[in-house]
Amino acid sequence: MIDRSEYRRRRRQLMRMAGRDAIVIVPAAPERVRNNDAHYPYRQDSDFQYLTGFGEPEAVLALIPGREQGETILFNRPRDPERERWDGRRSGQEGAVADYGMDDAFPIEDIDDILPGMIEGRSRVYYHFGRDTEFDLKLIGWVNRVRAQIRQGARPPHEIVALSHLLHDLRLYKSRDELRVMRRSARIAADAHVRAMQVTRPGMNEHEVEAELLHAFRRRGAVPSYEPIVGGGDNACVLHYRANNAPLHDGDLLLIDAGAEYQCYASDITRTFPVNGRFSPEQRALYEIVLAAQAAAIDEVRPGRSFIAYHEAAVRVITEGLLRLGLLKGGLERNLREETYRRYYMHKTGHWLGLDVHDVGDYRVDGEYRVLEPGMVVTVEPGLYVAADLAGVPARWRGIGIRIEDDVVVTRDAPEVITADVPRDPDAIEALMAGR
Image 1 (cartoon, rainbow, N blue to C red):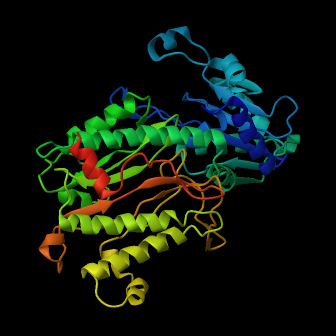
Image 2 (cartoon, rainbow, N blue to C red):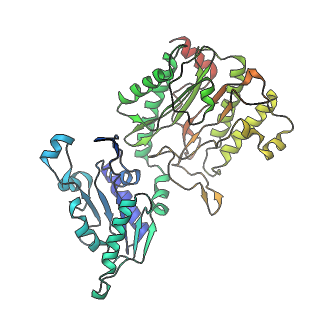
Image 3 (cartoon, rainbow, N blue to C red):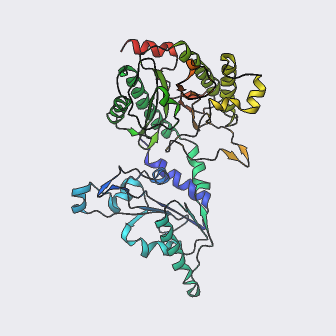
């Protein structure tokens, strides 16, 4: 659980970065209609969640550095016993102050009357322009109302600045509380993957395995952090496979890419294992290349190393392995230079992780890859994909897709793999599945 004091600290830090002549405006995520009068499950906007911990829709946060009447203002829904009888309890304005640490709160219906006055006198507005067209138009309307009163002495802002330049750099570095929640998310996802290994058998359908994952998430108070990938056989070679509706055959591998979201923080795990519990010689040979590549990459997740370093380490090991098996020809350096490995390994080795699965934060600063620092969290996920229709490849290698993914915290010392509870070693996987 993130303590209320941490949300307060985050808001103060953002206001210091924005400056005393600015205003920061962050709307909550809107509710989305699925069909007719049914909505998609509500999930708060990650930036709004990061700054408030407030999980309701129809809300707008305004941060106004130096404002004497209060710097942290929330516009949100008022209490309404009739609506709450249908949709659940609301915090209202009193709850926004008492439970979420706001300096003041106003009904969301009054925002058109109140917020333009708060914008007046501020030289810059920090806002995520382009995310929500409807809210963009509202903001422009509020600013124009201030501009229309220049002759009466009003001072409108002279620029709208992208909020991401400030806020997303803050989100890149995880606090102790955030890491505690992310470890919990990782444990939930790890237990689900272990359960999937234990129940999988030839003749099952991919969606039956997916159901085991979802059950494991929900019983621990989590939801999927993204749509799970459960791909057997050649389906594992489809990087974003989501159909999850094919039968699982004896002799195939099953690739599961699935993470849990707990208190809005994501985990992201991929494991690949044999449906019948035993790797074939070809499957094991490719698997051990990917496993060695992941180990080399994880070892590069250290402070002071470039973000790209762990991808380069994985690529070198994968290329060496493909040359050893005869799936690539020629010298190592030439293959690395010409990126011939991309025929079998076509994606990067990882990404930031946090409130979003592909979390925010620039990968490059001034044109150079960012240097890793303590508190950052990344995924490490090398793979090999030999599609069934890949020309020029001996038949024994075709239809094998493998990815191994873990979540890794950059610490002051050795990398911390927070998803290590799921077996990666092929012998350990076979032993787990033999004991099911």
